[in-house]
Amino acid sequence: MAKSKTTNTTNPLGNTTIPPPVKPAVDDEITEEDSSIIKKDTLQPVKIDCPTNEVNRGKLLTKILDSLNNKPQTQQIKDSLTSWKNEAGYSIDWDTANKDYKPKYYATGDTNNVEITIYDSSCIIIGGLHTHPKGKDGYAPGPSPKDIFQLAEAFIYNPNFKHSFVLGADGTEWALSTNSNTGNTATIQQFISNFPPDSILNGNEWSNDYKLPNIEDGLYIFVDNLSRLLRDIFHYPKEKSQTYANLLLMKYYLNCEIDLYIKDDDGKMHKLDIELQYDNNNKLQDIKVQICN
Ligand SMILES: [Zn+2]
Image 1 (spheres, rainbow, N blue to C red):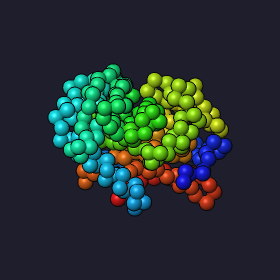
Image 2 (cartoon, rainbow, N blue to C red; image 1 turned 180 degrees about the vertical axis):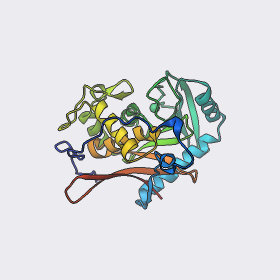
Image 3 (cartoon, rainbow, N blue to C red; image 1 turned 60 degrees about the vertical axis):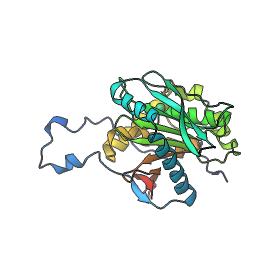
Image 4 (cartoon, rainbow, N blue to C red; image 1 turned 90 degrees about the vertical axis):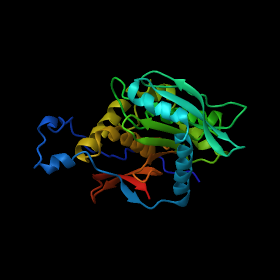
């Protein structure tokens, strides 16, 4: 059953004051003895137990990614991450005869986007994979706002298209994955009609002309502030904070029914979650990023 929780009338963050930008802690002056500075920005997700279906989807994503990683096209794509500033990607074809996941229709894009084939009547396209090289600015290794909507739209067009893998230039491997069954397109259809991509996005990013109810700032500024909150106050790594801010938005505001997975140190894909924790006065106390065991 779909979550009945609706977040359109309240702001889960309440009147949390997001502090102004903090100058990064003296990059050049880190000394050996000041361990507090070295520890900053390295907070890792907390491991938690998760429902079987979420764990199983992690296993499926691991299986798909492992198959793809064995293919030369994937090595080519990984090589392009370091040598090239533009995104590259391909569709993922489920080869029923050989029970194998295969790269299909390699595509290249610009610094911020690549369009891949989402449907072909001659094969079964179950998702896509693309790179996030270090472009000129605004680099985040994890999935972008546009990636979330591209997956949603692809899924509606082709219900087999359920997974979008992203390879970051820092070596991180991510996946957006729908938690709907093939027949259950209604929730994602609802998400797209509640949040039309043309108005909520500006190119690859959140549009600042878009306002969520009860939030004063435009969406771009709001999420950027969230990202800084995660980085400067809660000490999550800088390059992951943007993606974690998107995850917070996905869970508490968008109800998009799309989940975020990451490859952990064990080489397997695990679901990420994010939780807002409050004190007795309903004031935001902590933001916990969690990862499924
Ligand atoms: Zn992307």
